[in-house]
Length: 412
Image 1 (cartoon, rainbow, N blue to C red):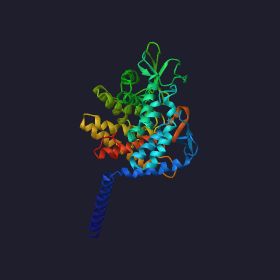
Image 2: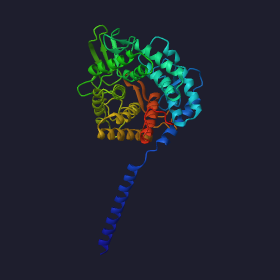
Image 3: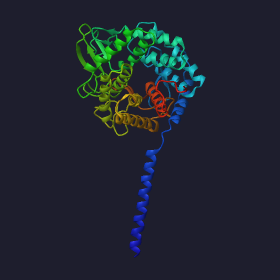
């Protein structure tokens, strides 16, 4: 009898423990993601970072592992628009005038880009993220004029023989200069072209953006919808010479951030054109990315890197995709896909918030991004564009949960 009671007692304890464990697990699953808390964290970190920028013209770009020191760049660096863009987003979240003042200060540093010959294709990253966000939030006419002028400047890199915008107008290894090169990142810069064409700029800017998107679909993607980083074309005939993956593991691999740019880029192309072929395409490009993600939804720097799981992660790619598929969830015609995109994006943001925030490590927002591993550059760094897209994604999620349009200022 004593033994039976002991057995029954142990069984009872096991049932209770299992029940509690399941309850706790369910409670964790049902835990509400506090978006405002994460945005307040971004405000705190960026407040710290802002105090460290003491030299006129300096713009934060990255922080090395185990360091608290920002590497600064000037307005010509391709990343120069992300910092003022982040400040504009924090102004949108807080409504605090001090963020508008700070955002304007760093935005003005980039003004020369609108009136000088194009150094490369990154003018959208630089000027649309800064002046474009500034205009969206303030309607200051000067900001609009800078964006329009910059779109015209970017248009000078368009090669009608090829049908795309030249990315690097200079000798870059393996690009067979002076042939025409186009990189996947360039898809993001089309947003400025579309916007300018609808806000006082030439209709030709729209046509350039559509041509670029179409030629890129034709040449940048493999049959499985993974993408090359770069395609090199004959500058005179437009014939494709080769596809290469400049910042990825190999010419046949899926470089994480390259695929992220493709997802973000074709999402915005569909938004601007409403052509269903782009929606169908971006859903396929997104599917292959999502299917190959590791369990935590944060990609390794390249999906085919040989040392996985001991390869560096890329939080920046995760932030870009989270932001992109939140928008895609509002555009897709498939209700199941819409729900899946939103769920995946929120889980990505939860993972970034719980396990990738810089906190006391440095004054950036996120850790563990990878810039250019083959070149040994920015491996496992805090990088400014990861922070920018993380804040953007949080704001988009906040608006979605409130039933608001993604591009309408938060307070309106």
